[in-house]
Image (tube, rainbow over all chains, first blue to last red; front, side):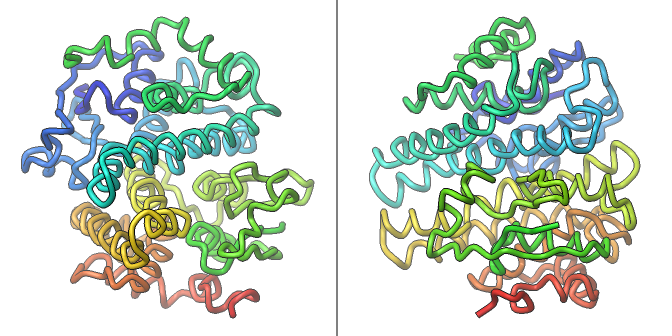
Length: 208
Length: 208
């Protein structure tokens, strides 16, 4: 498999974690986002959105959108399962993942922050990111109060943890961390795992 | 079932379409977003994000995040199936839905537009929405070229169509429609269906 991504891209980071947890071998092709590599014609032919990641399977089929990729990987490589087995549990875990993947990350990614700064001042981009991330994670913490254990949803790893850890990477970058006992406990437990360490941006071949 | 939502909320609209296609009876409780009803304590207890929709099941369990709700409904009420049966097809359909639910709608919803306008000028909010929606749907059209039939993914309705139609509602509102043959064909076919008509904002009890 070939992962088209970038070491600092949160959505690429999610896919790297899942591939690692499932012990799937993969190669990486890097796109420097600030340079606009992801908007070159060759990549647009793979993914017309011009966003990373895309996951190219052995037969050349290309998957896009990180949450869709996570669910695909979980269906084809079910060990370990990262989406629970009952509809109600799945709904809860998907909802936790989507708090991040729909309501926090897209509103604070590099593309949006560049647009905000261009419309206002260079300082407003980071201030915007800090606000969006802090408010989003504070709501996430509230939800975790009733469902978290060692991880976001009880004591088994799920796609919610896979979304949370890269989002916390951004939270640290933009000084948006809070005093959140559940989030912080889950983060500590994830950070101790080999697959999470290997997937971290600083451990990728394209890290500066 | 009780749907906590608002007639103009795209994400509530998605859930209304799915409930209608599956012939599930439901009641609605309306939250006027501009008035901030969704940030009152009683609702925050149900959904700490303070976002609509939430779907309250008969036993009082509350589901949040529209895509998670759509998948839950499809698992419990599989007639008609709105997520295909093979992993690769599911990945494709989820990816199409997520183009809208992760990369277009969250970046142009009311909350974001109010923030943009507050930071810049009142005109900038709608201009931002128009740009985000147009670029996003143009990429969606490119993807549809290879997979669409009567609907977004071949000739069967899926969650991709359920996300597309409310997004087109916003596209029309912000003058962001393009000359997109696939999107326009799919829209025409969806608009002809009873469930889509019943779910439209202007046909809700809380429409002005």
